[in-house]
Length: 399
Image (cartoon, rainbow, N blue to C red; front, top):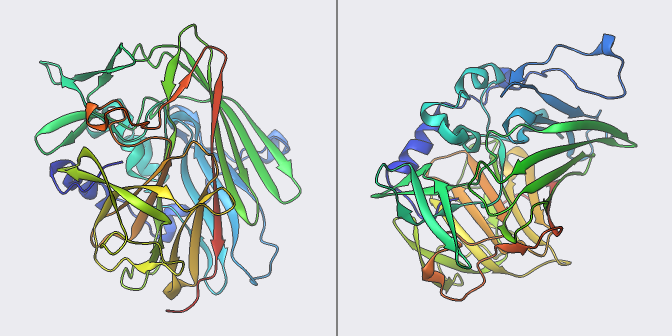
């Protein structure tokens, strides 16, 4: 994601997000794809990106005694984007957790043209998956402004220039934003459902050094939504791979003055006009210090910040957002040891917080980082790497 940007690109994204309607009618169930149900009981599902929408679901069992997840809706036609997650919150009933527009709006909005060129609209809502590079990549801009050229270990990479910042263009958020998943299977568990899928990334449209296969496992239970992606190099050359996620979590009350953010990071990346300088600075005692276990009020602070050097809990990076006014809080646990940074994006006056666990720093191929390990995982032919994140719920303490 972006770092400290208040330029034209951020203005466009905020304007795009302003179109999002989070009213209750936006989250009407869209039908269920269940392998265990006979065809006669299945409801006609809408098509997004040329593929049916998939919904995992379970019934509430706690009788309102604690928060619990109820459903996960996926868009296999758009890189397995997590369109929506719903939960049962005591005293509030079923509520949507992600900032997403109505499905009927997406059917025309995700058209591959205009703002959706390269699939860009996928990372303006829900939770898009970002492979083989989350965040932005800078480099030499082509004369026609359509691509940027950078390099990795002496190999040239030419990537789509699908992002724009103050005075510059860049590649951003990977190459599967509009990819289609295949081999989808829904499996029942004792307390929920799991969806598995594959994306044959190939060489990502000729932009990458080898061929990559992506395996997805998304599991829904009462207490967690587990999201896992394994990237395997199935080609003949060593390649760099990083994986991330871009979920826009709602602040149901809309009151940022009492919503609290906890990020167990000791360092953050410095940026100028959203471009990293290659410097890391301590957060302690600054406006970006969210280390308090209780969290720090968001107030009207604008966040578009890349955090790193975490104090891990049982090996995990635990980021949380509490919204006491709505009796709701969510926790994102970065489980994979390869996750080095978390981008937090929450513009002023917005009612969402995007928490983006990713392997890499921004502009991971950039010379500004010198010889620092920027998080790109080198995969030799036959090797794989797994990114895993767990989303949980909790009842926050009153402020």
